[in-house]
Length: 115
Image 1 (cartoon, rainbow, N blue to C red):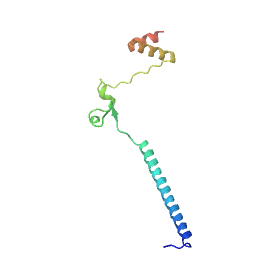
Image 2 (cartoon, rainbow, N blue to C red):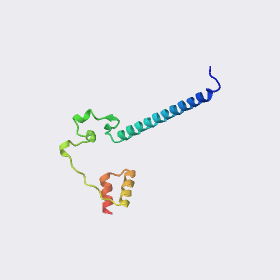
Image 3 (tube, helix red, strand yellow):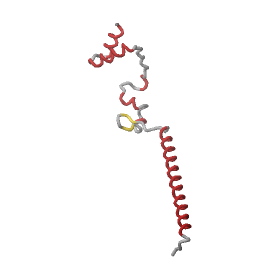
Image 4 (cartoon, rainbow, N blue to C red):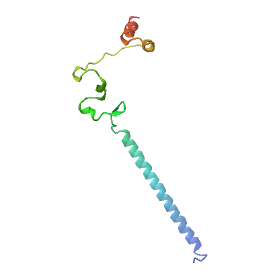
């Protein structure tokens, strides 16, 4: 159906079409990569659901002010700020050793602060 003289022209058309298809695939892949990167960066800064011990606390927040309040013995109105312990590195290691030995927290603090 084709003569020998039209063969180079058909080959040229095929190569042009192949180059256009390749450019279209590259453009599609670049666009897909940009959409994925945009979605990933948007989800990185979005608020995530609050979970506590593997259970979503969204249903319980209506009655409790925070997820940590679920396991607290104190009601909301008795909130007190705990005093921080100003320990140096040696005292911290002493506290860890006391915890490993099973000593009570208050006893360990008294013992370390009296040294």
